[in-house]
Image (cartoon, rainbow, N blue to C red; front, side):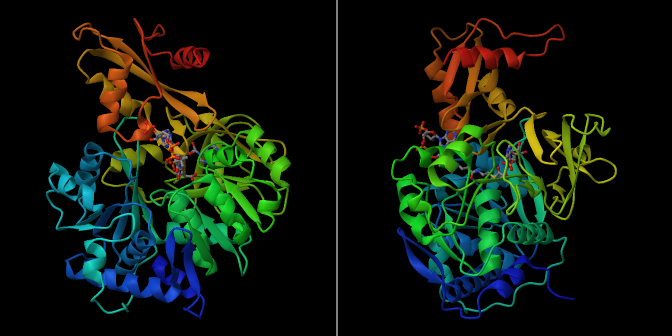
Amino acid sequence: MTNQNLYTLFENSFPDDRTLTVFEGPEIASWTFADITSLSAQMTHLMVELGAAPGDRVAVQVGKSVEAVVLYLACLRAGLVYLPLNTAYKSAEIDYFLGDAKPIIVVCDPASREELLNLDGASEVTEFLTLDGAGKGSLLDRSTSYPKDFETAARAAGDLAAILYTSGTTGRSKGAMLTHDNLASNAQSLHKAWHFEPGDILLHALPIFHVHGLFVALHCAFLNGSKIIYLTKFDPQVVISQLPKSTVFMGVPTFYVRLLAETSFTAEACNNMRLFTAGSAPLLEETFTAFSERTGQVILERYGMTEAGMITTNPYDGERKAGTVGFPLDNDVRIADEDGNLVQEGEIGILEIKGPNVFKGYWQMPEKTASEFRSDGYFITGDMTRKGDDGYYRIVGRSKDLIISGGYNVYPKEIESFIDDMPGVKESAVVGRPHPDFGEAVIAFIVTDGTVADLKAEDVTQFVKEKLANFKVPKEVFLIKELPRNTMGKVQKNELRAQATAAT
Ligand code: MLC
Ligand code: AMP
């Protein structure tokens, strides 16, 4: 039987001429396919020598470097389970992930090593390696003496390749277990649906700790044996300067809003481009339209989630429609009500999905996993969806209490629970409000308990900022007398949303 290791699929897709460039960019040195295959082998040897065996987790919280991508490949090669963490996460958040996933190795920035080392959740970690944003650190120092080849570990399709944590409506993050086949099948679907072709060059500006930048973008490029122009962060000016050398760009809606704000973003700058895709959050029709008016190109919007990779996409050849997410990729989809009964054609319901891309379950949460799947194996996405007469799917809302800010998910419950523990706070409610740049902004309403004199909105912001990732920090805090509730005692978030919007 052939090895189902995702790395084997990539390696078989790399060009025969391994001296070709795979990574280059204005801020980085150029890398050939030979460079990444040999360095990933060396990292693999190091991790194996440190005692890591197939199935063990490797947690990684590092800046965006090529070495970080190579580390991901090394984990695949060794059969280790890659666990990427947003660089914005603070210690308290990391503590939970480490305690829950129990990684054998942690790779982090040198500046945070000491702090992470001392976390309660880190008690079973064997080794803390470092890698800074420039790719330097003990991971590299200790890898480079090892042999430059490694026989990729045999993996079955259902073996785990990665765990990605997603927050939950209960406030507790859940580790979505993704298998080699989940990732391979989705990559192959996208590679085909988006017509990747010889000579394509991917311009990569997304972070590499989430599905979009790590899997969707990189996997398509690897399967195509493509060159990647690799930017260490999203800067619209730098993106514009690299577009003439690129053919494919993938972004969250905020990227497109920011590109359109630049006068140098012109049709001419996009002349060499074959494809712009958008997702992770709804793309506003006004952005879609302004983009095509400015560039003459039509953004292809697709829809997905951590638990399933990409689920639907607008067509490459057919019409790409604003406000829609197109048609299902290689997975079965259906729209049902809360109880799982299918809704009538054209009605709104919750999207349920089943296919090779759908994850294996939440790490060590069998009950939670069971509650999010129907008995016939469909996963309940929580996204309110309508299929139009034209057959295109539209994501019209969410049944889960979730805010998406600049492409990052923020679960109000997590922030509310945190703020409720602040001295002087009786209770809180967090909602999303439209934001011109981030799509939605996090807004908090606070009711004080009178025990802290002169508690101010800024104190609440500061309290959150110290402990939670910056994208979760409320952009505005309102102190109010009481939270609006219905007769059942449930907080009326729609009313708060309206109040927050009226106050802009
Ligand atoms: C940064 N800030 C944010 C934010 N990003 N606040 C809310 N939401 C965000 N997304 C904060 C900063 O900390 C700073 O706060 C202030 O906002 C302004 O910062 P900035 O310099 O403008 O931010 P920047 O570093 O440019 O980051 C913006 C961004 C980034 C859009 C480039 O958020 C980003 O890379 N987003 C992409 C997320 C992504 O890849 N999602 C894919 C998930 S996968 P202060 O207080 O310090 O001033 C997925 C599945 C799928 O969803 O379908 O793809
Ligand atoms: P995440 O858990 O970070 O993977 O986020 C997944 C969620 O992002 C989905 O469940 C949707 O709510 C949302 N999402 C992704 N792509 C789109 C899109 N194109 N339009 C609307 N929502 C989207």
